[in-house]
Length: 317
Picture 1 (tube, rainbow, N blue to C red):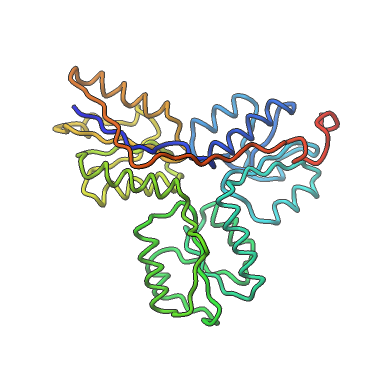
Picture 2: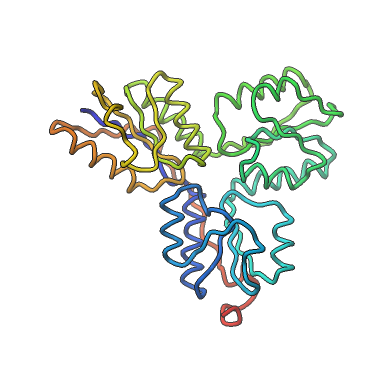
């Protein structure tokens, strides 16, 4: 059996940034601290941080006054900041800087009088947060059908923005449809789909041309992981999205000689290595080769959290 590993894979700079913020908060502040929803969409990471004292909760109302609240990498609607302040919480915002960029673009274009066509997935936390920045100026485009049917009341000042974790191919198709329908449509100065999403999709596309089966490590609610599985399938490889090695079925491996492995941007490398070890146990003749597309050097420094919560740590505790 031959194992091919996509590179880059796994953690992106935004995920490392968000996890780093939680770990730094745990170091500085008394437990528990609270995270609204999941800091990143990965079950193992969420559980590990919970075990250390970072509790994921579903609503701000659940949090006792005077507590530390961290907003996740996906970003939140602006009213969440207001609600947290009214409730007497101390907020640390772990929104990925590339997601925050899209929030700022939405605010800028709305103030400039544009109608914004936001390409994203309905109900995804990132989309919810961005759409809330300018609800009266934004229209959600969730798929080809929406791009074909959307009918903005003003087509003179029209701009599109996108969720950062979308399929490159499908998003390109939607943008082409919108540009054909609306000649005045403009886009952001730099595309919104993030570098990590782009790199991982191109890497798995290359991988899937050689592999008969592609295993994608990531949680089911991870948009970028789902897109990786779709890209591999579109290249003709059988593909499955799994949380860990325990979900691999023996039936998948029958008559398979070349297996590709990649991981979504919020999946830790340990999950990949666990799968490799699992496959090695299945056969004595197993080789591992890494297929590298590009080297990633993006890094977001962790801010000074004491200043981010606006008060001294001693007075919080």
